[in-house]
Figure 1 (cartoon, rainbow, N blue to C red):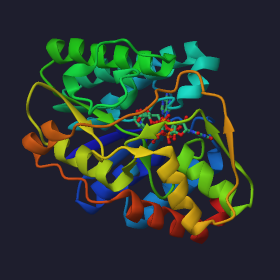
Figure 2: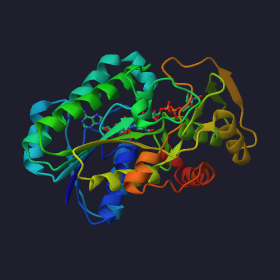
Figure 3: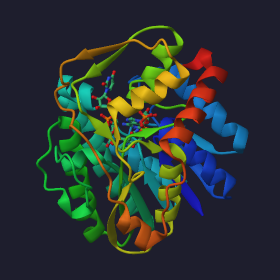
Length: 316
Ligand code: NAD
Ligand code: UGA
């Protein structure tokens, strides 16, 4: 089976591509190598994938409708895992229009090109941010209502809606996966866990935005497992949460980090606009439908990520 992974040079993409290669899929990666974070880092991701086996790479901007169509005509994939996007919540408040291009327009281009080139399966990377700010309870798929609080979340909600449109226009099966705050080796440098570990290793203070926040931090291997489980699903249109199912308060995350970095200095700052207070994935639907079970606890995941960070200091 030939799988096109868009955004395959990114954090989740590199882990996904490596796993698919190990599982025997023919893997094609389409990535712009966007400068949201360093290009050097993305090239290292590609080198890491190469260690697991061969893959095909195409540098392409999926906001370009013609280039996207040409990519699909050339590759003729059986399935596409669409991860390419601008991912940060905070940056979306600075540059909202970029998110319309990179998260909505690029998704429409992919959905259209996939339909025209006879793709059988589309997996779309959505986000826990589509639930908006609904703290204190497990988030079930049907609780998303469009009442979101950042341009990033609005663009993911809109892209989900386009997935629904194109699932009705073409005969492919669409799985929308709502990932919950993903971390692990090669984690995105702008995100809390990767950022905090780097600062702690350098003896610098971490800044905490607001108080009482929490996240359903999900280890990247569990996310990749969710992607692989959905890849062979044949239902016309389905939405699943992919999370750990256990919210972790910021205070607990910091306590855990202090076990590794006892001198860690914490500075409390004001709430960051656009950030939801907390997330908590109800994963019962994915568990029931696909036998999805997260396997890496936050304790184990942090241990692995910190070990990775020490072994790869030069790339942090
Ligand atoms: P990432 O930034 O590491 O990876 C995204 C990749 O997409 C990058 O390599 C980038 O160069 C590429 N890209 C961006 N725009 C492109 C374009 N127009 N054409 C081609 N390539 C393009 O981000 P990530 O954390 O790996 O996230 C992957 C996906 O998962 C994103 O859609 C993100 O919104 C979603 N997601 C991530 C998280 C998380 O916690 N990391 C949580 C929920 C959802
Ligand atoms: C993350 C990703 O950035 C999004 O791409 C993704 O869509 C989203 O998860 C998701 O789950 O859908 P977020 O949960 O905000 O967004 O992840 P982080 O940026 O790692 O922030 C986690 C928590 O740490 C938040 O409460 C944030 O306010 C806090 N934080 C972050 C700090 O206190 N200090 C920092 O320096 C960074």
